[in-house]
Image 1 (cartoon, rainbow over the protein chains, first blue to last red):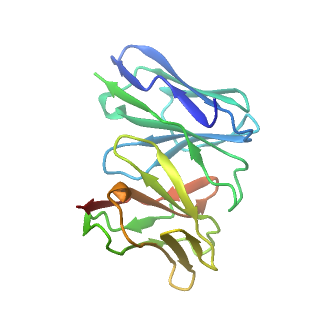
Image 2: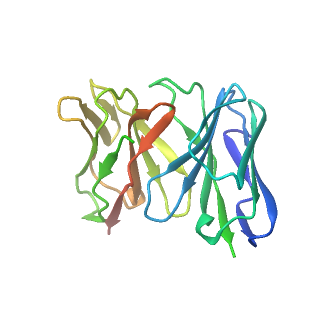
Length: 115
Length: 109
């Protein structure tokens, strides 16, 4: 397997559920990201991990909890979400977080629906 | 927050046409510029990086104009398969790559 893989592809959850999104990158990159993409809005950065240390938390509500056990894996734990959290959640990785020559490579995303 | 603006379109063009998109950015200190392509309900995929000297890849040409703070994407000889949303990255704000909202392109037979 190559690239950035995310599971699950689709997730429907109730507001009281707890679920987790998983991301794995096989590119040897050092930085991993969670982005949220809502309809008709630009991509919004949620979290950044650089060498598995969280370096940015973009004012994300605590009902979203990231975890990065190593440079290749990233999780997003979800609990007590709201219907407005329904969106496409994209994981990405890059070789470095601060270089023009280090673009983001995205996973195929998890389409989340909160009912 | 540093913003990036794009015309959302849609741009409807016939096959074989040449089409150009612009994207303006507000952070004059920006260093990172890219174009991504996103198909419906799929993830964004890197199309090309954008450098001050310009960048060409087959039918696609990207330019950066630092003085006017915009980047452009030119697509020549459009194909049906070019239909997608094109996202620009106009620099970074800390570790946050700043994405535009995207421009939708439909290439018509």
